[in-house]
Image 1 (cartoon, rainbow, N blue to C red):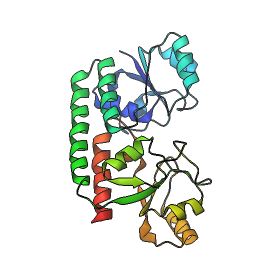
Image 2: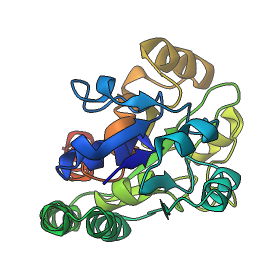
Image 3: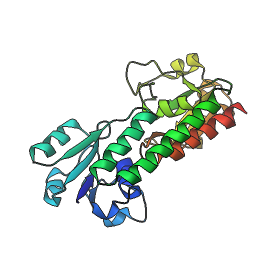
Image 4: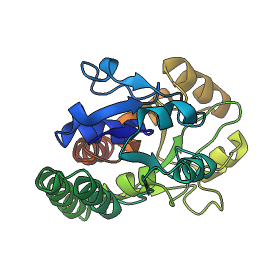
Length: 251
């Protein structure tokens, strides 16, 4: 089978399903597993794939994500006669279902079932632990200039919610709302989570925000965006990561 993946988390999933040898194309953002992806041809980016190159590779299946990738590119690939598997999991349960669906499409149902069952088991443990945890609220920032956060209609919020977190911008109409510092101050989250991606927040930005808002440095925490936003075979670790984050915040 010949596979092209246009989403970094799905590229990682292909390898973890044991189908890495079948992967013939990826995006330049597909960086995991670091020791395997360099041997796979690059077909542009997630938003600007090289469609002609993908067609030339003659894949049996193209894996896409409805958020990371553009619908017009999926439509163009389908018009070219290629099979496209597009997904958009917003919850942990939907992620487990996606893993099973892709595993079936790649002829790796048993490997997919192992990952999906692991996701479901860890989610249940995290949910049970969160039930006895003190409530904690957060704002999750993904971008600077302008500041952008996430609503509850995102995988990120679902993962943090599983660990008992309440998103202060959860009810936003947009999935990734632009927010002002005044809005952040009024929302008064227990912690502001600064993601490592897509914007690479670091300690300087925590200091910048703390100074602007008059909040202590302890109220800001840089978090691993890959673990909290990549849905697929990284999700079991993401669930544990969110749970540990909640433990650290609530004692």
